[in-house]
Length: 209
Image 1 (cartoon, rainbow, N blue to C red):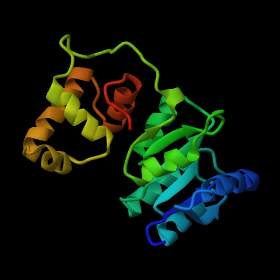
Image 2: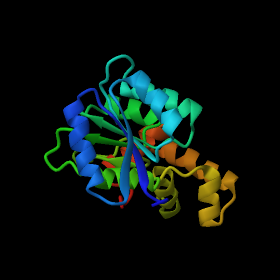
Image 3: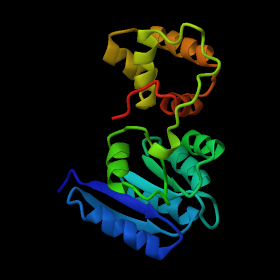
Image 4: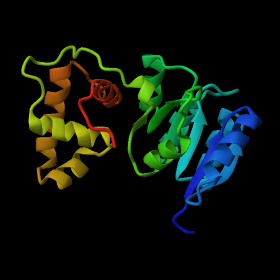
């Protein structure tokens, strides 16, 4: 099938890769096209095979999954990377998203739904493990909160759309979207898109599919 979701699996444990492969290939819409056991091989194979989704372990021999993601995205801007990790620290999540990962899920989660995560990332969605989405008090937000239009634009930002794409979707000029984006960041006291995405999802400011 031409429209199958092709996947590259990156993990330094062959048993883990085998388990993930079985889990994914049980679904007829997914096919695993390659496997890598370290960060350097991950970069090489991702650029060679161009999979729809690269499932990347965070802790790898050689270069880390985060550095491998950074290198892949530097040479292939459309690469869709799903980061798997044992750790739920904010710093790691932020680093993974800044490196270009489109999703971050916990390997040790009892209800790990790798299929759903891979499909979400393949569709261009930002996928965060449900355990990472905790309701927290909003900090740095202006007293009146975000406007309806700002929340609408924030939803599109979290979906990974550029100012131009958001403008086309909402019938606005790219300049107007850029102003809204700046206002949202000022209101929340956040200055990087990756941090904005994590903040919006953690605090329930957007609706996750």
